[in-house]
Image (cartoon, rainbow, N blue to C red):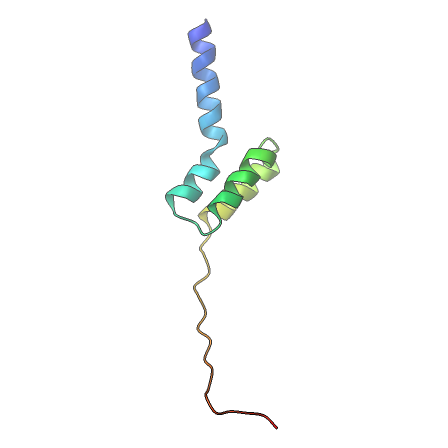
Length: 74
């Protein structure tokens, strides 16, 4: 009986932290923020879903900033 409860608890913890695991596996830029959101608000279904969507969403590509030399304004 105790082994069954332990196994059930272990499965529940693994399922609970799926969004954090996905964020770390995908090397997300904000993976620690995803983990914290999952840790503190994952108990609510909304917090868990938000963390999962954030974990699977695409990171923004870096934007290039072009500075022209010699374009002084009076």
